[in-house]
Length: 445
Image 1 (cartoon, one colour):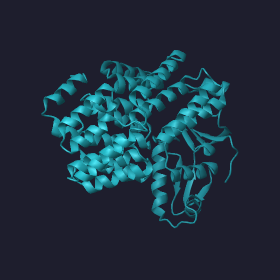
Image 2: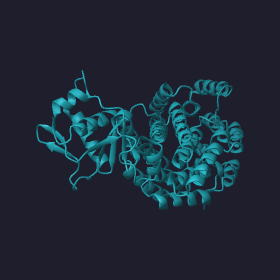
Image 3: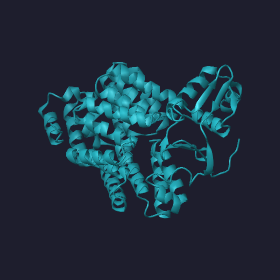
Image 4: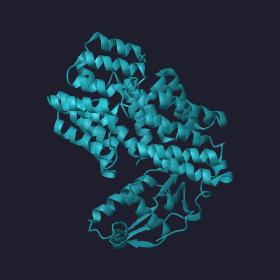
């Protein structure tokens, strides 16, 4: 069923905007799989009415035979995302053997105006609704975590601040796009993180109460400045201002894990998931936590869970491959890295990961070909020296590995934050040069 371009549906703390494929909770995007979103849109548009199972299966899976369990699983995911918001009984009622009914009261209105007036960006909604639309689109693309998505996100955030130069949260969005471009090594640290700092600073100059901007600044202080006390302070400020902003808890968990505070880190990533239970990046980082704490079987389960939600989410394939390599399942690891490369062409991070596994698996010719490929790629795009060092480490060529690790240190590679925990460096740990690198990172005691 088609709906007007700007129509939105408000129920409880949620706003559903079908044309934008957005579900917001208190103004923050909630991730849903494509089928779960389609189910929600159908149920909300027909709120108060029974929608049969057959009708839902026909509309959500047209021209495809699927088992009823697919419907049950997606309804369960929706209930988890929506919580017990309506009278403590949930918003979706099951009518046994028949179907489902959306029972929460629903109001409709303009997507730019309904539901946001009480949030931190409410003033922007009133004075510049088009800026807010662009901001929401920016957050959607940022959450994809691909190079294309991050660049599209930056374009939408830039559009938001062109429309409304006072829009602090949109500057924070720009900071997050550039910070993530650096984090995923799509841009060099020198290009990405200073730009992220500038945008976070601008956001705070415009509005010192925006929690997102403190989280953005903490991200830069952690990954580029290696300012451990400063990053901790910024994360704490962000949490104090808005304890419900999921990315703060997500990134603070990364900080705590790298700082050697694994139990606190696990608590924070759990808090992040509670606030955005279907976020692909947050759920992937839970797998990342299991990986870095050596709980590899749990990491595999969690990352497979992410890929069941979206088989095209490349970071989950990357971390699953890294987990398989630690389990000695080298062929499975290489298969996962190839899955990444099918989705993110010529991404040096996954190519280097594949080169390391080829080396430790004794596939020396393959590893050397990957080294040559990385060096060719470096002529046209950024290739992190950390990745090159990994391939040399996989080949057991330690002098070359340390040469490239020192290059990574000189360029302030954010990957060095994981130097103490990354198991791929286990073959170098007894070398005094490794201890020297660790001491230069000024890790918290």
